[in-house]
Length: 506
Image (cartoon, rainbow, N blue to C red; front, top):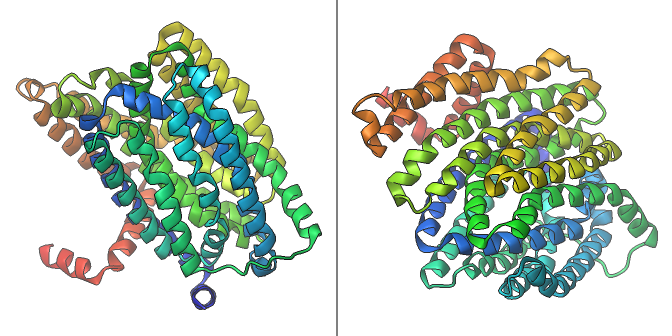
């Protein structure tokens, strides 16, 4: 009933309003998650050693690839059939559960081999703990697709915020108890159970024991390309850890893992939430390619002008920030954070263009881009690792994200009829404005007196950068400034008390 009522709301209010509301809710969630994740990262940096981060980073290489294998793209196929989703829920559910169980068994079998490969006996226990979560996570797949199809992003934002808070709090508590690397692994299966229960309560699927074999063949056949694409992407995502795990110590891997988690958070949270909103919206606009492309381009611009300055600010604050909080304990991670924070934001737009391909059912093109990325990424990472260990890998990864994902997005949008200058603007202007604004704050932090204190440098970098960027945006990209102001104004309008308080303070 809840899904039907929400569906009526969407039809009454319009797809655009539902998508805009979804973006606002998930942007709020992203900001909350970023704050929670930042505090958690600092707490864990106090409680754990680089070696602890390194071991769990290696365990995640197996866990991440296994989860990509079991997802198989069933959710994307099911989302494409949202009008008759009830008829397809049962085969989708049993396929997901079967794959999840196979994934768990595969991880348990792979654990001793991974431990021998990385010369880390403790990986057997860590991978086993993570494996338990694999089939449990699949229980929420079908309800999650139903919630996304109904565009109930308020519930998704609330749950995601809760999950991030619970995960980080649980990890910190276990680290405080002295659980080491297991602090990252133990909360995951627990939260998988909670998510399955809540999502089944919110959107209970109709799961019959019998269904037509033709449905299974269709889902598996349609999912094969998505499955291959996701698997390759996940192998690429874990590629830097795979390379480093073979050539560097656990402490060095841990420093890189810490830096990558810190650098990737704004991109993955914001871009991930954007596609959660946009993929079902794009699917509903499949019959109107022009509107679909226009919506994708607007979303790309919005995301680019938010993510790039955020990441540049992160790079500028890394040095004085980590030194202020931890002294020299994590100083070796600063160059990695700076390099990755400069490269990763250029991957953000490709998340949206990739979801555009999925909505248009151009899965083979997505597979082609992924297949090219695999040897390219590993080739660059191996060369960088052999040249200068973790620092070389960080440079290679930064260059990869700075070049290949933008090239893919350019080709996809050009294929949809978007002019090349409009695509290049998505990268050039955010880069230039962020470099000037954040770079100005960074240079100002080296003025006499200011440079002697980490806290004063942090204040100057943040203050100058955060004030100068919107001014430059207003002067040079007025349409983007107005779009952002409209979005955040709408967000403020969602909360009357905040609006009244803002008016009274103004």
